[in-house]
Amino acid sequence: MNSDFLEKNGVINYISGKEMSFRTQKEGNKVKSYAQDIIKKLKINPYEIYSCRQMHTDNICYASGENGDDYFYGKYFDNTDALITDKKNIGLLIKFADCTPVVLYDKSKKVLSIIHSGWRGSSKKIVEKTLIKMEKDFSCQRESIIGFIGPTIDQENYEVGEEVYDAFKSFKNRDSFFKYRNEKFYLSLISANLDLLTEQGLIRENIKISQKSTFLTESLHSARRDKENYGLNSMFVMMKK
Image (cartoon, rainbow, N blue to C red; front, side, top):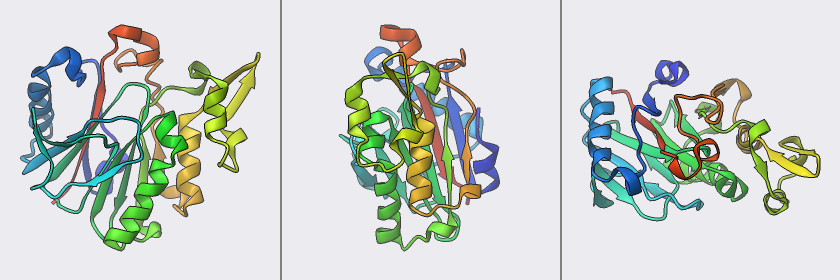
């Protein structure tokens, strides 16, 4: 599947589900063929594909096409959860099961980022920090930036502990994206990341939200649903030339 919203705004993209799995612990070198399949489907020839060893951090790396460590299907950064590039022939790929993929693109400056934002990344405000880096390093303007919040677990199926609620204590709108029912907390990762974007000045009309729940959509991997047998979805993005 892909996002028509991103396509119309200049971002080639592809979201893979159960037809592939990017969980290298289980798939090993197969992930190389999966990445090649995405490239073939999109009929593109990127100079390099970047991914990262995602550790639920707020670390952000710039992909130049020359930096990074060698990986199965391109380059990668260790201990990283967001990628940024200003190169049109560089592909960016992140993996997710129930966490949230977020894409930011400045249509004027031609700067693209993709972010892996689970509850830890969201509580660390990785989306906000990526926006700030786009502004600081590339002179991006927030009124020119579009955002896409990809498939993620729905709130009704995302029960979390009180420690997760406490991790969001610095958010003034915290109670708008948590539900408390039967002495249990339920988190909306969509609302948390949307709050981060709008609080930082992104225009609401410039943000598109996927309606797909990883938990409820059988064609997508879900760690909560599939437990130890879970696989990893991927989201690939690259700027149009």
